[in-house]
Length: 67
Image (tube, rainbow, N blue to C red; front, side, top):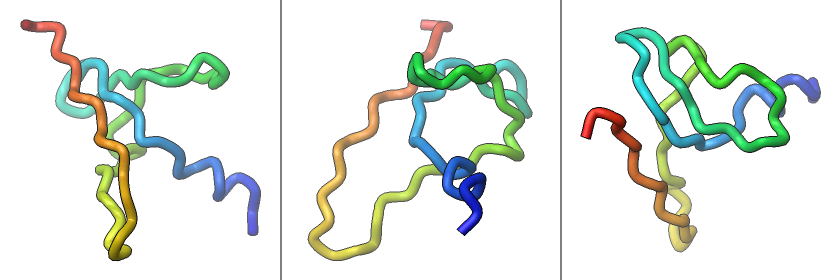
């Protein structure tokens, strides 16, 4: 398998802010030395596993700076 294919789907990450309709700022771990703003076409919604009995940690709430 291509090593780049493994790194293309990592996460989930917390959405810190919606910059505009097409751009989101994510909260990334400190070891990731990449820009933290992404076009919506590069993001995918998080879905829990459909495997019976699989336990998931709850996702953190979306932070909203407007409140």
